[in-house]
Image 1 (tube, rainbow, N blue to C red):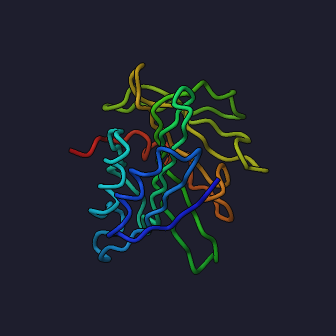
Image 2 (image 1 turned 120 degrees about the horizontal axis):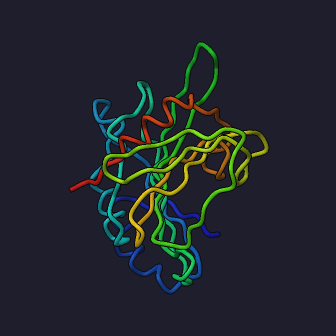
Length: 192
């Protein structure tokens, strides 16, 4: 996997040229004013729109979290979900010296159901439908974490909540509570 950071001025041309590569991750850090710490920047929105997927973001993000970055992945094998993005949020609590994180992930296909976790929490999104948030060991995690079953219509795109350590960009941080994770999942809505 090739990870690339791109400045606002050149990312779109680069992104459109990535379709010929096997797999790429395009990363766009969030550099916005303090009052807009959880909102996507114009450059990040352009990046996501260039993928051709509808952009879904949470309308609820717990206090203190900041949008850290947006990752976009492209693969040649569209049959198994070749286009995806991840919006990553993090929060550092100085008192406990802990970092908390989560992401919202989207893909155009190649999804399946998750194995049941140790616990399962219902998710009822007014925009994206019903699903569940699972608490178990998923992805890169060596300890229990949260991962949402996919939300969205049968034809996609599909969206889900991703907890700490599931993917490398969410390593070395802690999970939020299941109540907050469900609330974030249920608040997902499309950007105009």
